[in-house]
Each structure stands twice: as structure tokens, then as C-alpha cells.
Length: 122
Image 1: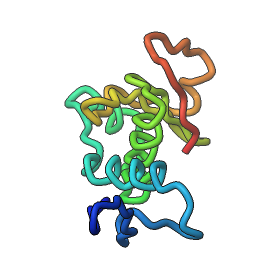
Image 2: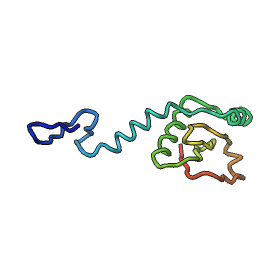
Image 3: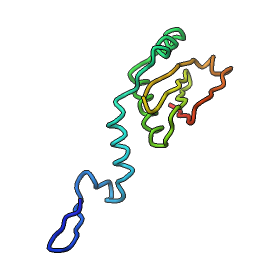
Image 4: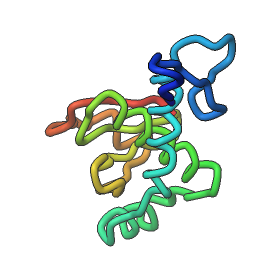
């Protein structure tokens, strides 16, 4: 925040602009804003049916990981990502924070992923 004090400009550091060590807070502020805008990840009807068919366990921990991958992808400007771990993979539309489809590790061996512009390992 900048205040005018007796004809001079003076910068005031507030808790919102101060980071560890008092150095550049833009990245930190951007990360906080991205976390605020991403409430979580939703599954499309198609993704829900695929996860059920393929026996993919959607746990709260997995949902947190998927939400984190959306935040990281947003920071890089990605629009459609492949988020994957050792057991499964998910195609996610980043702007809508929506899982489009889900596949298992066995199906990944034969798959080619198209129309993605990023990959995030969970």
C-alpha cells in the first residue's frame, strides 16, 4: 500500500504484501488467489461412469491432488491436462476444473492422449 505523507510517497508493508524475508510477494499472492478461485474439481457424468466402470477409487486425498494439479496448471496457463499417478490418469479441463475422463494404469499402456497442453504427475 502506498500513502502520501507530507508531499512524499511512502510505501507501507501490510501482512498481505509481506512474505518471508520481505522479498517479492507476487508469486505468493498469485498462488493464494488461484487457491481461492479453485474450490475443487468436479467430475463430468462421463468421468463418473468411467471411474465406476474401471474401479477407480475417488478418495478425498485424490480429490485434493486433482485440485492441486488444476491450480498448478492454471499458473502455467494450461487448458486441458493429463493428471496421473501410478494407478490412474485423468483428463481435466482446467478453466472449468472438470475431470473429463478417467482411465486405469492397464489402459494407459495402449493409449495416446491428444488435445492436452500439459501433464501433471500427482
